[in-house]
Image 1: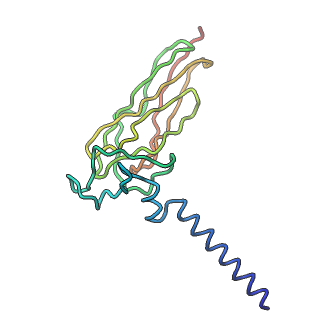
Image 2: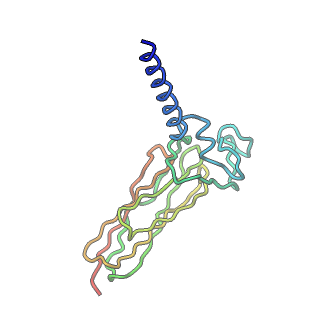
Image 3: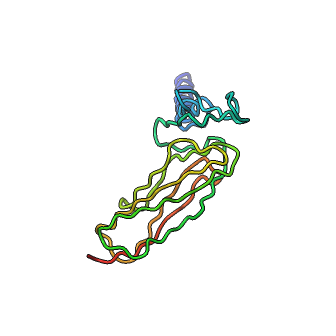
Amino acid sequence: MNRTLYTVLLTILALSVFVIALVELSGVSNTAIVNRYRYGYNEPYYPYYQNGNNSHGYNPHSTLTLDKEEDISNLPKTKMEFYQTRYNFGTITEGDVVKHAFHFKNVGVNPLVIGRADVSCGCTVPTYSKVPIPPGGEGEVTIQYNSAGHSGHQQKNVLIHSNSQRESVSIGFDADVIPK
């Protein structure tokens, strides 16, 4: 009987340690969020509690650095609006490298942070600012497409992940690639 009780207690202890580690690594707890998302010169990211020039304590001269490209869904929500989500490059020749900037505005009340951009193909490379966009501020996501090895009608998408109320937004383009 004592051996069975010992095994049960040891199992509960191991599962408890596993759950605590999982919560800390996933960023669910406030401590994990502070440790994962650093604002400026290793200052914790506290948009509601920092003393700053506006009601949210946002410092537009600071930069956000992520320890890794991780999900930022636990940051305070804001609202992101793209001026366009689709672009047509028209007809291009195979091997051409083209790019387009998709402009957006932060129409919410909190700083907007883009965490990552997922592409549907290695031929598409997105670039975006790692600096938080203040409320009312604007930014852009630039997509570069290398048509080498592609022909015919191409449709590519990029999924933008941010702390927006819609945590991901799809933007993309079309191109008709003619062989050389």
